[in-house]
Length: 247
Image (cartoon, rainbow, N blue to C red):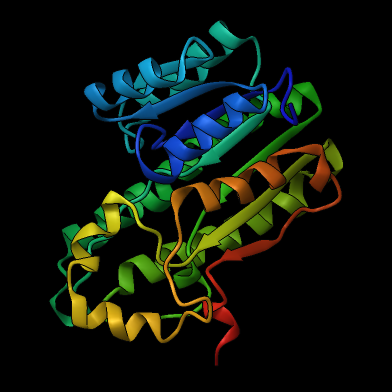
């Protein structure tokens, strides 16, 4: 019960890493608001996890939706102790073939939506004198691979955004950290993982010899969300099977 009496907002909370976090956080005693675009997935997650989950439908790129998310969460749960910025998009393409609309959409979801939601939650956390924000970033915010320029750049910006929150709001009892997963077996990576030859090459970069599970990233988020990490802020934590340890 490491999160007993805590409340959390998890964006992208109905699938993948977000859903794994929601399950784990509830099991550890938290009440959780999950946020996502697909009502059917939200309903399914709520039914699976139970009454400790509040499902809020919306789009992270729409400020009216994120405002409603924060307002509903505070109304129903009383407060917001933890924010997991997990919603994201990944649309690879060579840089010279990347259209403006695709670039803008990547940053709208991976950064602008994060900024707008975090700004709203920070106002509440400052008033309460405490808070904990965890950003689900990527090892591609720490190192680059070809044909993913928009994603690489957005996750690099997210890591720096997290550090900025840590240094700006640490004195007000608010922590901010980023988790940087490697290749994780989720719906978002399913199409990429269908390329068997490419995955064989990717696996050579993973000392553990396998890709990760959403539950393994959720465990890292739980550690950062709990009081066990009370003296940790402004860090980027790779959860990548040793990938970033290789030169």
